[in-house]
Length: 36
Image (cartoon, rainbow, N blue to C red; front, side):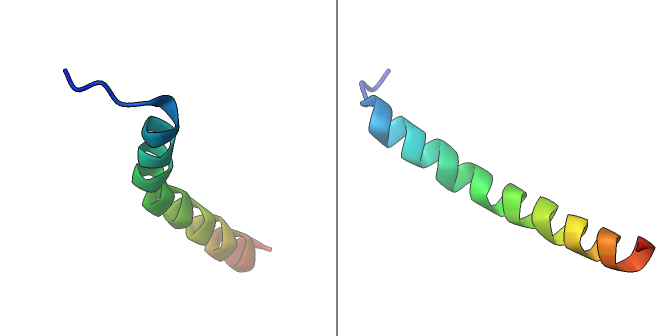
């Protein structure tokens, strides 16, 4: 197992989750627009 420091791990986690967060935000925006 590669030893990687916590800041690098945190950055990777953020990068991996960014598309999912954007999709959720987009879906929320569309949902509030449609159902408002």
